[in-house]
Image 1 (cartoon, rainbow, N blue to C red):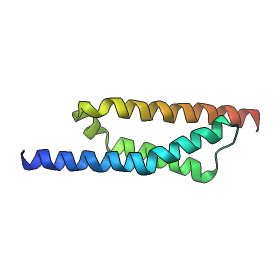
Image 2 (image 1 turned 120 degrees about the horizontal axis):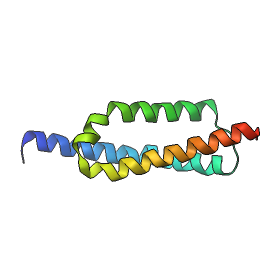
Image 3 (image 1 turned 180 degrees about the vertical axis):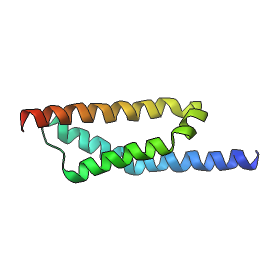
Image 4 (image 1 turned 90 degrees about the horizontal axis):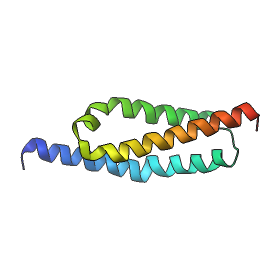
Length: 94
């Protein structure tokens, strides 16, 4: 395994760990709350902005690693579901 392959593997593992232990639990909690009719707080909005900014920063990594496409697509879909429901909740005024 080349040094670049080792670095890619370490980067991939770090990104997966962060997703599984930090990002995903909070996204799922947020989804549960907005599905229950809650409005997002400023902290929730800031969190979603940071997730989107991180995804943009890591875009080239995801593009060059096809094995990450499925999980990246699932996270984008979850983000989209949260945003749509949060907008619906805001429009209802709940």
